[in-house]
Image (cartoon, rainbow over all chains, first blue to last red; front, top):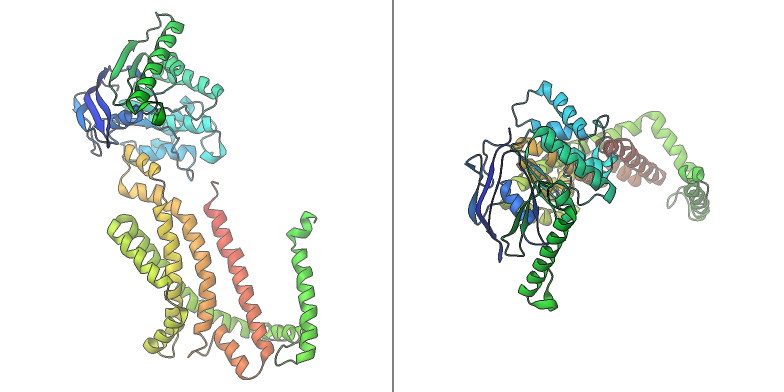
Length: 256
Length: 250
């Protein structure tokens, strides 16, 4: 079952403030793309949403229930990382059945369950392959199948297609749209590629430069001009990049 | 060089032939006590194999290695587990292994004779003390190099400690265990043989030293060859097979 995700005044300091305060809501079954310049804390924010890292301030609730880092909660969160993070010594099927073990899926059903989700991402027939024997795109698909197999209330994806070539990227973007429509999961998808965000996200959340706030929140319902939207977002990102370089002491040591 | 020639170690045999030729000449010049001829050594080898003596001494040595080295592997596993579970334990294990690594074989031989007298336990104890730091260092390194990102994945999907241990930590440490055991076994064979010079009346080390005392130099060479054969055989048959089995996924 998809649930509503509320991000309420979340901020994070490492040595310096990275995320100032960010608030937004993802409706049940919504698809939000988090966008922003490099180093603005997109990944950090996603890790906070997933309960992998604690927030310095603010809180995240899933269906009203707060997510606290490193503490178990009733809701299921699936995460797809930048890297596939598959266990190389397990077949694609066993990589999926592994995450079903902590759940109430009976052992006898795990294999069929894994097969169902591997086939959903187009890996039917590759169940017995080890990750090292398939392409990068297929490994990332398997990681998505693993995240979907737990039937997550929320699916978090951190630049999952970053390591793929242009062709695979295009294919996977279409696939993730299809999977979203078919499964109706709540999805938060981090990317720095504007075209990708406009292509797949129903709601676009553009973060500002560090320490980040929300720069713009755009409903991408397909009614506006795509080209204009992409241009606007590009302009915003360039402004933020310049601001970040300015804030860190000009061109001399501005690393963006 | 053609590939089949390299695979059959033809170049190595060619070099060996040259060495045997030089060996024959030197042996003829200085006499069989200093350097027995290749023919004499071959005869000795046939003799010990035919009489079954080769199995008696090799068996005795391997038995001691099995206990001493086996025990070392067992303790090394416990140390690695401790290093994985507790940061404090990790520091202690590191220091302990550094000290053990710096201790000479001779120290353990002398101490084991004092403690265990002239018995089987002297070479067993020496083998244990020498191979423990080698196997344990490898294992601890393996445990420390477990990919944190995979463990984080395990956390995200709420695997419990046992599931993370068996699915992530153990498989990623196995190559280190096999590598450590391979080096450790080679060392065990070399060390236990030295320890067998004292106090026992079986084993390759004992018989080599005995052969020297009765001026049968050719038998010293025979047993050296037996040792090399045992080493190569276990390396190829046991460890290489094990390594291949365990990394079928590569």
